[in-house]
Image (cartoon, rainbow, N blue to C red):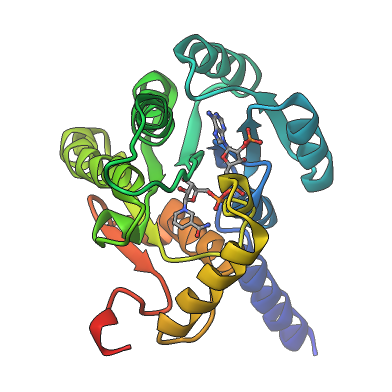
Length: 269
Ligand SMILES: NC(=O)c1ccc[n+]([C@@H]2O[C@H](COP(=O)([O-])OP(=O)(O)OC[C@H]3O[C@@H](n4cnc5c(N)ncnc54)[C@H](OP(=O)(O)O)[C@@H]3O)[C@@H](O)[C@H]2O)c1
């Protein structure tokens, strides 16, 4: 009877340990008030991490932070001073961090020939420059053995119409991922990219495309995905949380497509 009880306690401890893979880790998630960042904040918190989310708007960041039960800090990745302030505030309140999820991003579709300088600067500024300087500025307060996960896109590899600059911003980010993984390896800091396919988040509604056009796009896209569905933010959150955990301790410089198979062979669809 006594033996049985200690066996059960052991099993429950193991289960608990498994559910808390991110115990004692501090995670910063840029753009954590919405979509994939929000779902990842929820997942990392569930797995035991102390989570800090960021975003540009005070109201949206504080509401999400309250809903998630995490810390919210307003910070714009397009503004390098704002990233400096974020790093200083995180260091002040939490010391060094273990997980950096570089997730903040925007999508502004436009056909080749209609790229404006403003659109170029905004997309490259957020998705590439903003991502890179987030990493550069957080490096001094990353613990050795930390995990950096860059949220890229399968668009880095596709020639999907209207995505030229968006796709280039993500391809550039993936290139940085590889070099950073090599250079940061002596500190055992792992750097990986995650390339989602179409995922149900508010990002599409922010493009300014009319609802009818959005629905048409979503229908056509879903039809091309071998698994016949869009990704959910939670699908991406599961992969990101795995890469953040010690279970992924031998993974660095890699990229993971998570896209229902859309990148397999679109020609056949
Ligand atoms: N959804 C997809 O199909 C898909 C596919 C592949 C890749 N992705 C990538 O996934 C990432 C997350 O996007 P999502 O789909 O979850 O869209 P989302 O719901 O629109 O979330 C984007 C997040 O980024 C934040 N953000 C945007 N610009 C920012 C800035 N300058 N500074 C700080 N935060 C900023 C947004 O916050 P505020 O705007 O409130 O400040 C928001 O929290 C992006 O990098 C996107 O490119 C998405």
